[in-house]
Amino acid sequence: MTYLIKIGVLFLLVFQSCTVDKVTLTEFVYINESGVTINFIHYKNGIEEKSIEIEINNSFSIKVDDIGGLSAPQIQHFDSVYILFDKNRYLVYKLDPNDRVNRNPYFFDSYEKEKLRRNYYKLTYVFAYDDFLNAKEINP
Image (cartoon, rainbow, N blue to C red):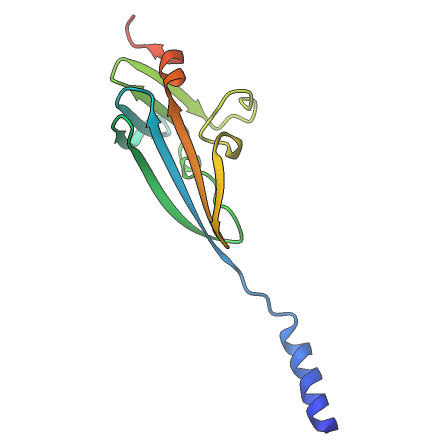
């Protein structure tokens, strides 16, 4: 009997320090409710890296696996994001910690956060009609 207790204690000592990293799935969803087609253009070092067109009332999503917790918005891999509304208006977003006043797809607080399951989150960013109205005109 004491032999079993010793094995049990040894087992607890050996395995108590083992931790299991949890993989978290984060789904980023970008919804276009602006009333016009948008192009979601990503720049790195001033060069266009990626462009995604989102039709009116449609969305684009990307799922990211990460160890530990919520993934950072994937656009953080780029210098700036240029949103082109119907090819005649635009907004530019940058990873600027001083720009916390306005909605900005670089920051978590601009997303609607929803926990779908344990270790599975959905973060939704909506491009609204107000974004279109506040966008600058190209060659006014």
